[in-house]
Length: 163
Image (cartoon, rainbow, N blue to C red):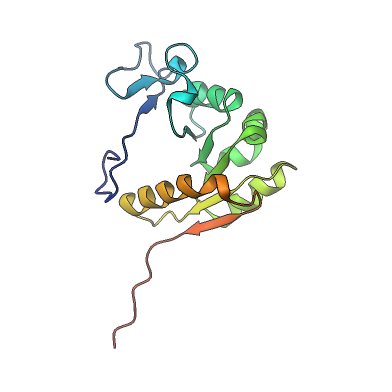
């Protein structure tokens, strides 16, 4: 299950957490590892998919390093990463399996940032957690068979008009 959601699909999730924000190591446990453990204690191929969630906060350093070294899905949740600050993470974009962003403008920026195309999922910010989890789960199932120039948009369900 995806923590904090009422997702109908039951997919086991391993969480790789940042540990650079504080002086204490990240709490490890079943299905919870520090990001820096990837490559040393857990291998990328131990997982079906690795999603690196990148933001502009300084405590995303280990995740950004993982994304630059391991082909994974990039979830760029802070559009500032696509502007001036994304330059340092261009290597991550060059090897990404796919990119997940929050707007069509961000998808356009990703397309312009590199000559290499990879599939892009646009998740509307108004999409609830369960719907976002379902959209991402479906995306991960389909992404390897998609054309590299695919841009899929996942938005909130549109209510049908009352008769």
